[in-house]
Image (cartoon, rainbow, N blue to C red; front, side, top):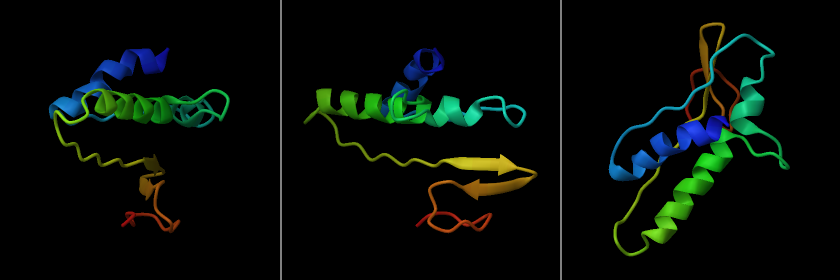
Length: 94
């Protein structure tokens, strides 16, 4: 249900808009599950990327795309890059 609501915003990234999709709430309320999901039930992140690549495939040859993705966690006033190979707070993936 969350993906269906956010999909049009995410697709607008391919029209040149900046988009941020985030989950906010208390610990243990399902934010990670909503965004990441499981292998059987993919979350918003996976489904959004899948949709973007599907649209890019449909527009093949019309335009050239360059996508940049960040996945961050803000916890106790510390920002952590969830795609970084290091687990140190505040360091971005290269």
